[in-house]
Length: 451
Image 1 (cartoon, rainbow, N blue to C red):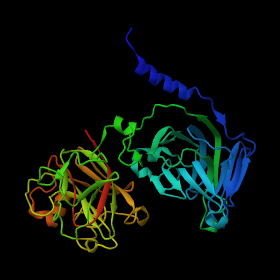
Image 2 (cartoon, one colour):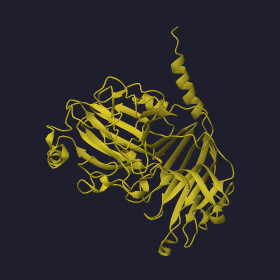
Image 3 (cartoon, helix red, strand yellow):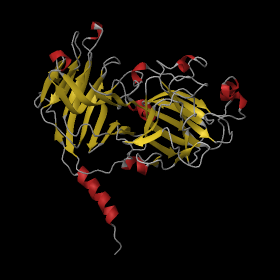
Image 4 (cartoon, rainbow, N blue to C red):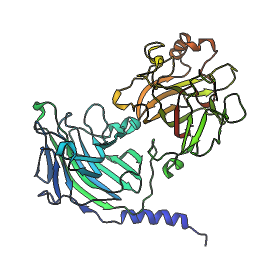
């Protein structure tokens, strides 16, 4: 008989997951098994619901937390928010620092975002009290309409080893790969309010239940935020992602207009590929590096870290056909310390600032989503088969355009690129990391070709 072991393994994994029994975390009558550890919001039980009520002058966000901690699990519950001002969240694998917030208590850890505002980020993943946003739901627009305001919404959270997933009304919302917290408590949040008139707003939870997850078949068709450097999760591999930098060698990269990797000014160590500061003009020392492979439609993601005052860029659709001096020609995702480098004030209407389409379109950024020089940021460039292009910075879409459209060509005509015929419209091209005389580091460079 032909061996069906792989199929059996998948079936057994699935059965193992779903055979685990559900345990209720709320008896419908009391807060037994929960305790409040921060904030002064009111929590009460009525009609088989836990109701959280905002109060004026609460010094910090309020939480009731489970007395037990959980590691690998699937959590389900229903939640309803009365109005669009009462932002809330569900903590998991979380912790408390009793001395934090000047002794008022600081809860920190993963949070399932509950966002009834027009932003529609319910189901996104936030790191409360620590790293801020991990998975803004702008990374998965198809899940944004899943939350239904004024109704009970079904929430699902699954943690299995280093993979965290969320659902809203059975619609997959977020997926994060991370190793910071292996276990912790579950908590229900009532957010602080700045306006006393908003006191009395309510968040309602019911049917809270949990079961262990010992093995699970993990799937997610959207963009995965992977916080483990130079590592592709099984989900990403299954979805067609590949590393362009292996974290150890220059494999897959050569110098622009060269047959080998530059012998100077580029350094690979500790899982990072860096262009070393030289103080010279662009491509005047080691020169740019380009991918050996060419790409047409793709989803490119990369981490980058700027030294103070640094200037660099990630270019795409680089053909090397121009044989120009200086940096090779291509569409450029600008990398710049906007606060110190003078280029931020040049160009037109800010179109040379960080994450902009250099010299063409300004990136629309919020300060809170920009990491300072010396910290890692994540850039992302998406080019669809229909030539629609998007730039992201730390999970937030900052610009979009249609490559080859009249609007695009009109912008090229008033830019420094007007001297190049059909600039940026090649069918395919290489990815380029620019040497511009500044210290800039890269890691987790990965790409998925789109059909």
